[in-house]
Length: 502
Image: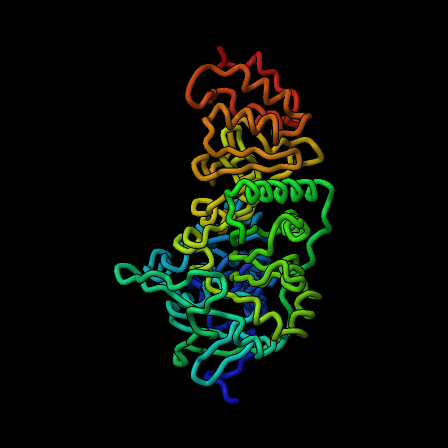
């Protein structure tokens, strides 16, 4: 089959991109990103810098990309600014050192902001494909993310045709973009399974400048095995949801789940699948991970929809060997759909996400270490937390070998405030914050979720507080953080010597 643009080596495709331009890249949580062109662009940046010439670009993707994209471009000092999310250690270092300007964004709002021009002009879209027809029908690989929007707003397009992914992926994707206000109509989706769009992204063939052929897998890896801590958290989540089901606060047929990415999330999904009190459940989420594939195989999850198929390489190869089975049980959609507040509310999702720290009143920090250094970004957690039927945050009760308590008097950065957070679960237990005053929430979180080794420290703060609807004192609220910054251990604050208490 003929192609709608010339085949070029990655280096020649990268040579088309100029200093100061803005790129929209496919990819979401290391799945489906254009690796060869990005590596070639990093090599070009190094050559330009060695010659004494500036070379940096603005980089936007659906979410995080792998080492070949965020990592290599950061090491080459090629990223002037980046949004909306990242997870690469080299890019994180550049952001926290001030070398790369990063602005955090809710993932559901990214496509609309691109279309309305809030992020400026997009010069290029670079999109990985498993198939491309002469008239511009592009079948994505393992993610959709914001690729349809990037293809629409960019002046020119580079397609990475990755032969590792079979053309038979056509049918795994459901591409639908809502109209922009004031012409937007209700999104016609009332369940997890229904298709509402096309099985491909329709490109304008005249905008395709080059096609780069590759054959390489996503830069994903298997998650670590469950630990005792993650298993205890997972057990508490399963027990809580089973109790809600018995109490009639979850319908008998259950509700769709959204679960964040990572080792603890995998453990939670496994525990839910193994709990006989919980019926088979569907998923309406961002990221399909290894545990979801196991649940699809067993029938415990009849159907899953997401925007990214972020599975380990062995699991992906197994899926490709049984592609018809999974195409009947799985859909990948744009992040504008999977994370859309309208759909999250309509379907009544149970949202389970991870916190870096939680304070005594239920505010959650999911992005910043000690209130200063960016970890990854808010991602889609805010989209789901604010709009879910049940919003649950999970975290271990200690970190850094016991030196840090993720339960603190006041979070050092607020991503999800107390009005959106309903349930906190750690390896120690569960705090159901629904219908509770700030003082009641504080007692529940302190006694049920804090680690025993830190309860005395937290009581030392809370028990000294003056009156007030939200009893707190700004002069001492960060004393545990300050102690860690001085001593690398949060334990042992001498509250009696601090101002602010009566």
